[in-house]
Image (cartoon, rainbow, N blue to C red; front, side):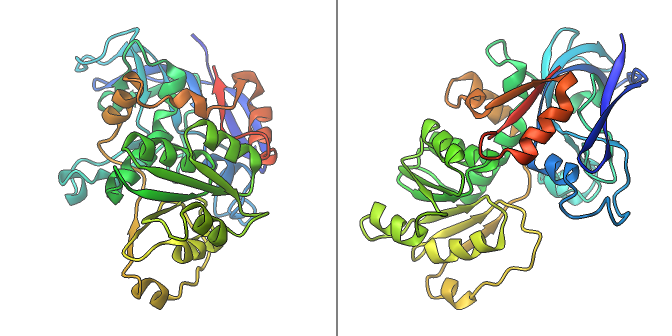
Amino acid sequence: MKNEAFYQVGVGKMEKREIPMPDCGDDQVIVHTEYMGICGSDLFFFGDHNHEVANGAHKLPFIIGHECAGEVVRTGKNVTHLTVGDKVALEPGVPCGRCAFCKSGRYNLCPEVKFMACPPYFNGALRRYIDYPAHMAFKLPATVDTKAGALIEPLSIGLHATKRAGIGLGDVAVILGSGCIGLTLLLAARARGVSKIIMVDVFDNRLQKALELGADAVINSAREDPLTKVRTLLGGGLPNFVLEAAGRPETVQLAAKLIGRGGTILQVGSVNAPTTLTLYELTEKEVKLIFTFRYANIYPTAIEAIASGRIDINQLATDEFAFEDTQLAFEQAEHNKQSVVKAVIKF
């Protein structure tokens, strides 16, 4: 067996290299990667959007990627729940298991978590063979393929966030941002029985995908005023949930205007710029503002939701590229957002 990986070697530049086969520890498995999804955070590094590469704060080269699934080809001597040939999805964050957050079940807040391709842990998923702790490798049932397995990671964000917000039957939601995470919020909210979902974005292709995945209405905020349109769609009212998934200061501000009295704003997007909010605007409506970060204890739920047919996650992937075409895949995902909603790489 030959191991290969794509390294990011410069801003917008990937390079394939042969690397050693990994060793299999007693509590580990070796997984042959079959699919990897390209996440927005991968593109953040690829395009150097925070200029960390340019100013020397982020060191290259490194292996990118964290949404992955594949087949077990070797198991450590202490591993009993997995065997060679099993298809698995890898949860990319490995917590310490010792801190107060881990012990309370909120291991997504572990300060020592080792998260794939998230500095300072530079070994990502964009390699043919991965050595990984077996307890973070989740077996997929026969009805769930590894393409869906790779998409369990973004789906877990949507499931964890909607669970944390307590959204469910009878609620009305507006989701700001119809990229991958916004769409997983849509899938999760629909699976939880939300009565009406309106999606807002500036890209028509993403809004069309939202309609395909079950949105009741969509708004292109580049052409229409979202507040006016939402009031029209809701008969003059406002939603009791607004889910922010765009990660931009202006959409955070929009969320404050769109939320109805007594409602809940769920902040899912990562906002990396100063954001101004008029707190009285939220106070007079007695708004609940909830933040969410990654996920914890949710992979089994995501797998069950896909296996049962409650969520068809494969609909999320709009573009598939071969491993050899990784450079093209990242370029397309970075520069063609009008056409690419979610790109996956097939090994």
